[in-house]
Length: 409
Image (cartoon, rainbow, N blue to C red; front, side, top):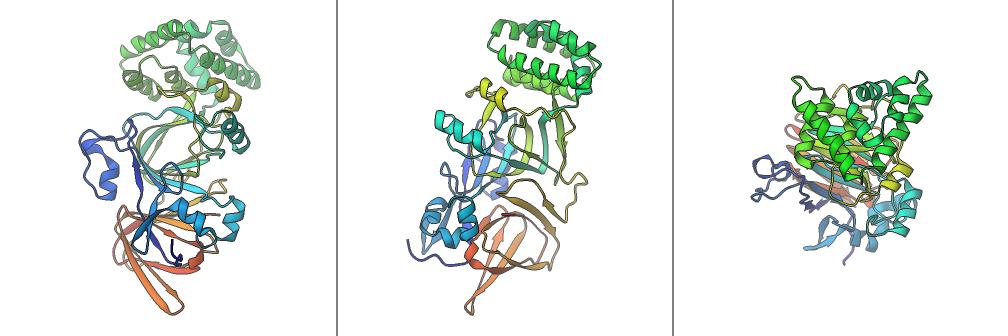
């Protein structure tokens, strides 16, 4: 590989065709990147980054190379010394365009220590040793579940769910309904959720429970949001224990520009929508339901967090012009810009790499290295890497543009 030049590099990214992705005329990712959707092929995720499973590629001297390989050969130029040292010579984040026609599995992610342990014990199901804090930003809209609801909401749901006793017995539920102490209620609800998950292998009892709820709700004229989700997901997943999580978790509806952040141990699932997602560079998932994939109930119950609160929505006012999505993640910070004509800004890399993704319109990038000026134009669906070695560059537009910029705090 020849010398690495400090300039912007267009990225060529790979699509993941998971079965829950959107298809045909509803396929969002092909429209986003300007290709024709193949018939009946699900387009679930577009990966932008250096994850070894599907690294982006960039062109050097008319030859394409995977980004992870380029980083191995030119680590200082791409990452800079700070990022190289802090993240062990690895590109720290993975950016995605995600499009779901139906629910992803109810899941959570381990923290860094837990990930290292799980990877050492079971590298097949836990393919790396990294944690996976992540942000989901609604590009159009998103329906999701995340985190345990406030205690009073769970108790009200349990009052209207007598069928759960077929799976768990009635003693624990009666204790919850009779308790007048909030902290005691929290502990009892934890035990109830753990009981539900550990009894999920009792297919006969689970079937009676799920079918009874479905039959009762199917005859109701007016349904709550959790009841609506139970009905619609039952029709897709059948007698899956994950259906009961709708009565325990917050159901969230995001408008364009709004976002949620999920840290280690937080149970969540994206139900339907088109989003921009960014996460630490990991593919570790502990699954709990709404899936035929590997479920690890013991690990899930060991690391799950019980917050019992309304879930925070980032950018709840749905600001559109310019928003920086602040989270506790050390690996990434996402900003979204929606600008009219004649916008320009000079940016410094501060010896860190960053990635741009154009969601609409065109963005011009200009730079000057040793009195040798350069410029490139990027259009909707395209992404590009700014290496740490570039130092300074200018972004500008001539007409309306919307773009995401992912940096490292």
